[in-house]
Image 1: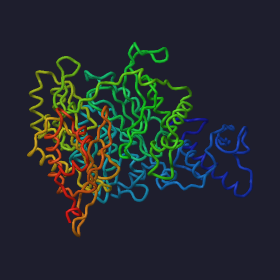
Image 2: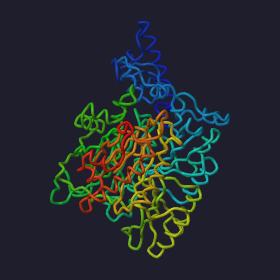
Image 3: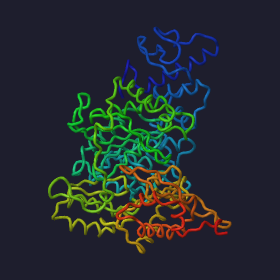
Image 4: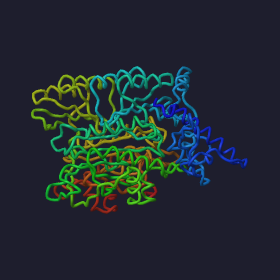
Length: 619
C-alpha cells in the first residue's frame, strides 16, 4: 500500500474520520475546531487538519460524521448531502460505515461457518463479485470481469472446472460480454474468488456501485470493417479502474463501452459512457481536428429508462479516452445523488445540469478544454451486421475466419465450455471472444479447418448456424435466479424460439429480448420484439406474463420500442408473436426490416394481426 507523509491510505482515512468526529464534538460544545486552527485553513470544504507527522497536512472532507468506509472524494460528496439536512440512502450509509474491500476476514469467517451475508452486507458482498440471490436460489452468484470479453482457452477450462466443483455445473454468458457462475454454496464464496484470481480473472468491482465489465468489439483486431482496435483500450480502461480505489463505490453502477466500427455492434449507445470510432477525412480536417480516426464521446445511455447515450460534440484521440473517462467518473462521484437510488445514475446528473454544464465540469476536472467538432467534420462507421455474431465470417487476415457459436440464451454446460476451449486450441489461436449478444466467437480458424471446427461445435450439442429467431434471442437470468424477475425469462425464451422454429421461416434476423423486471438487464426496449416480466391475473390466480413492446433498435437504427400490450400471460405469447411475424412477412415492402414495418403500422393494425384479445376485452 502506498504511504504518504508516513501514513498509509487506511491510516489516513482513519485519522481523517477521527479528526472530523472530534471537530463535530467540539463544535457542538462551542469549542474551536481543529480544522479552523490549521495553518492556511478556511471553514468548509477543503479545510486542513494537522494530523500528519511533523505537522503534515491532510485534506479533510466537509464537516460531517466520521466515514471510515470511504475514500475522501466519496466522503466529501456524501457530506454535502448531509450538510443540506438530507438523509443518505441505506446503501450509501452502508458504504460509509464499512468499506466492502476491508471485509475479507469477515467473509472468510462467514464461509467457514457456512453462513451467507445478512442485512446491508448482502449489498457490500457484491463489490467483491458475490451476489446472494435468495430466495430464488439459496446460493451465491459470482459475476466475473473479463475486459473486452477476451479469454484464453486455459482460462475457459479453469472456469468450467470451478463452476463444476463450486457452482451449478454451468456458465451463463451475459449482455456485457461477461460470464456468471451460479449456485455457489455459502462455504465456497471466498474460495471461488481466490480461484478466479489464480486464473487471472479478477471479479472485484463487478457488482455494487462500480464500473461494470468494460466492453469492446468482439472482433477487435481481426474485423475487416473496423476502424480501430478496441480491445487494447478496453483493457487499459479496466486496469485504470482496478488501480484507483477512489473509482469504486460510485453513486450507482456505471457502464463503459468502446466501439471500433466493426461488424458486430457493441451497443456503446446503451452505456453511461460510450466511445464510438469515427473518421475525419482530409477534405474536412482542420488544424484543430487533423485527419484520422477518433472516438466520439457519448454520455447517458440507459435504455431501461428509455434513453440512448447522446453525442457531446467531443472528439477524442485514443490516448485521450481513459483520462476523459476518469474525469467523467470523478464528476459523477462528486455530483451523483446519494439519497435516492432511483435517481442516482449518470443520466439524472445530465438531465439536471444539461450537457454543456457537465462537459465544462469534465474539462475543469481534466484541467484542459476538450476538442469539439461539428457532425459534418467526421464520418460514422459502416452499420453493423446483425448476423455477424453467429456463423462463419472471413477475417482481415487472409485465410482466417471467426465462427460465432450460438448459445441458447447464453448458457453453457461445463462439458461444452471445455469442448469449446478444445476447438479454440485445435482449430483457432487458443482464444475465446464473448459478445454482448450472449454468445461467443472462436477466431483465427483456417479455411481448411472450418468444416472440422463446425462439426466439433455441433458434436457439443451447440451450433454455429442459427434460425433468425435464435440468432437474436437475448434473455436475463429470470426468476430462476433473480429475486427481481417476475418470470422465467430463459426458459420461456427457449419455449418461444422452439414454437416459432416449427411454424415460421424468417429470412431476416429478428431480435427478441426477454427481461424479467424494469431494470431491463436484457435491454428489452431495443429489441424488434421486447418482453418485460410481470404478473398477470387469470381468474383467481396470478400467472407469469409480460409487457410486449415492438420496434426497438440500436446503432444506426436507434429506437425505443413502443408498448403494444401491457400484460399478456406467457401461454398466450407464442401464437401472438407467430401471428405478428406472419403479418410482417405478408405485408412488408421488399426487404423491409421488422422494426421499420411496425413503425409505419398502427397499434390497432398490429393488435388485430396478433389475434390476441385481452381477457377483460373479451368479457
